[in-house]
Length: 267
Image (cartoon, rainbow, N blue to C red):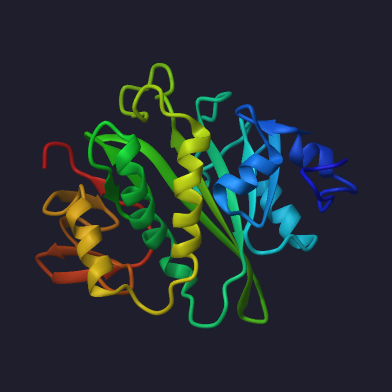
């Protein structure tokens, strides 16, 4: 099966994992998508199980850093913790970017860093400022616009590759009042031209979160000062330089590296 300009996915299991390869994406050719995004390679699909699944398969077969996987529809899109993500045909941007981090690039901070850079990039396309909800959600006017999923594959204690998955609603899914979309008339290719370079920048930053990054997150943090039930009961007090959520309770201020942030209604 020929995929984009390369054939990493050829072989057993490729059809079930990848679905049908496409010659274009939202009417743009492979060459146009590569030119718009600055990606090193692009794999385009009408329909896949998940762009994340395809990216892992491609990376295992040697796809280089900077390879972009795009689909107009996902049948089994997923978010953090294995949650389902609705990915209807041409209703959003469903992508995964393959990167191969070098020494000093902390994989555990990629979700927060990607969120900060994506929120800044998406402001121009959204109906209002794009907010952040730790660790990986994008919001507009209190409704979820998109999400980020980071999955790494390790060898000898080091990440061999990282898949940066992003789902952004162009329009909110039908019947989901809690979801948001981008402004009417915004197209997937014009958004890709901005967000793919933003993801690539996030994937190359070294060390702990800087003061500037912490400030950028704080200005968009939709949970700051609100009560939460998970990952601990208390009041959200932002994040630290390690990307950990800070929750204030009777026991003091405690950092949380994992889990989901569940806010208490009305608080």
